[in-house]
Image (cartoon, rainbow, N blue to C red; front, side, top):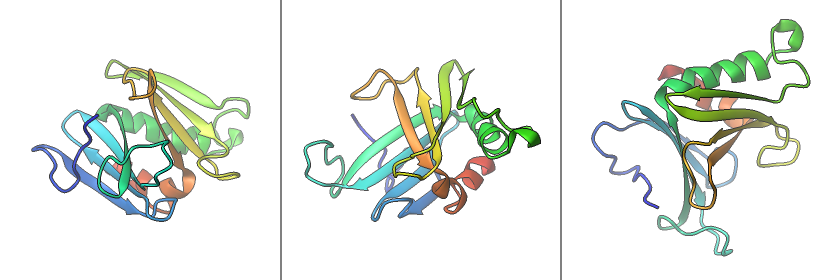
Length: 159
């Protein structure tokens, strides 16, 4: 699989935010857009465990893509369903995910109580219309820490 090169993006691609140490030491996360897609690119320090490949010198990469038009739906679900109490119009306590078809792509966003770390809440976004190299769908897990404190949600809103 070929990944975007953040040092030499194709014409029409723009880095919206670059987050250092997003959640794990040495990790970098990028939100990159073009005229019709939003791409979340994560760079994790490469560890020769055999589980992940070294996709770029010193890093294992993961790219997750959704239609650009889906960002407003994702932001709305995060802010108004997952971050609000049911009494404030948020999701009922037994609703943990939402599905939608945006730009012809089947998406699902799910509250994840242990997101990349025990007791760290966050979200998992799945795109069933874009397979991953090891799966029939692609997904990304994003802790609330990255969305709030590292300003990824604010960057998503700015697009």
